[in-house]
Length: 201
Image 1 (tube, helix red, strand yellow):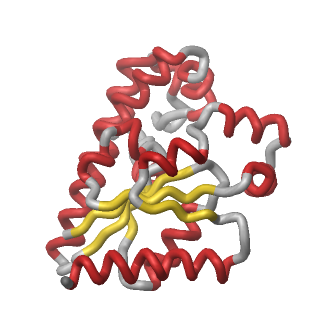
Image 2 (image 1 turned 60 degrees about the vertical axis):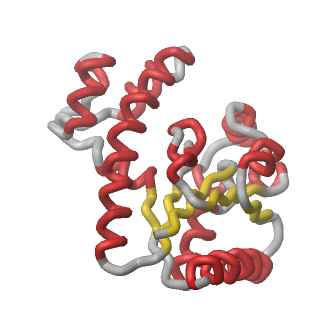
């Protein structure tokens, strides 16, 4: 089975790219969705996070109260690294389980949508890596519209992420998503043709 790791800048359109890939019969494992699904009461991840950061990060239902956790982990790089180490362990185990399930169903290719693909080390388990990037102003407009935040908050988010150049250097393929949906679909199709050709070859 061929594993495609997809990552990139905030606001670049990773979710849209994944939906286009799915049209070609390539299923997607979404690590953000996995993470959020694990933030419920008594999950192994929640138990470990409470042990690491205290009962104050939980809500009245016993799940994770994300603003409280964010306040702690964004106060220092050490705390953020601590969160990532714990979360990546659980997320990657679930991702591998889902990949295995797709393989048992006969899928020859699967995508893993992982914003922290390189930070987690999961890129080493991928056969192909794809970065979705965009022009700075385009990213700012998308983030402010999508998340309902100010330009200043959007700029702060991008400053704390890797640059477009970083992704270009690290990934097998780069999709520049600064134009329209037709251009984006054409970029995806080109990569699908290559990957499918390699898989069938």
